[in-house]
Image 1 (spheres, helix red, strand yellow):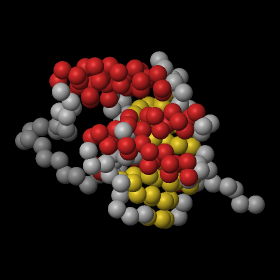
Image 2: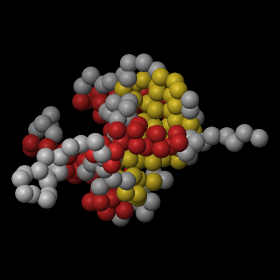
Image 3: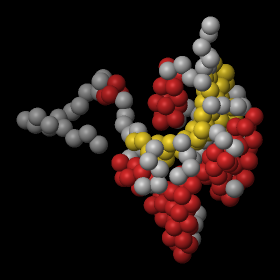
Image 4: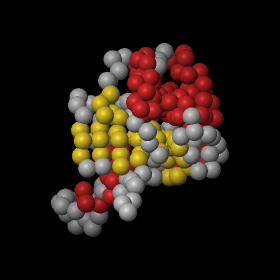
Amino acid sequence: MQKIKKKVCVLTTVHIPFDTRIYHKEIKSLLRAGYQITLFAPAEKEIVKENFKLVPLKKPSSVFKRFILSNFQPLRLALKFKSDVYHFHDPELIFVGLILKILGKKVIYDVHEDYELAILSKSYLKPSIRKLVSLIFNLLEKNISRFFDAVITAGRDIELKFRFYNRRTILLRNYPWKKDFENIEFQRKKDSKTFKLI
């Protein structure tokens, strides 16, 4: 009897379909492990390969649409493509994740950066309201994350912040591949046994 492949739905409204962390590191690892993947991402056309399907999302035309309106399309499609696990990558999708969890789905939140701090440098927000937006988002993000089946973080500092709210927080660093450095010739200063890698 053929083993039924577990289905994973991966959602992003911000990243390109073949993003290094999302596709080349996480999705490819899941494909090698035998999972069936549906990726929802901003793209021009649908792509179907063995055990992998890219479903294109319309890219939001403004910041407002990105944060508010772009939640409806991914949620509708995610529910249409029934999956065993839903793995989302953008803070804008946190309410999509919460709705999926309320509906009894398994949900994973992948936190790429410290959004509480990132909001403080957003040029599209007036400096006078950045701190308030950062505070509100931080409270929402951390408290909603309690309900998720897992939280994946890209850095130790982010992991420690989330672990207080969700004990199922995992650190998955975003290191470059070793193979990327294998054929690089490094130039050293004369009489120097070391080089700087930045």
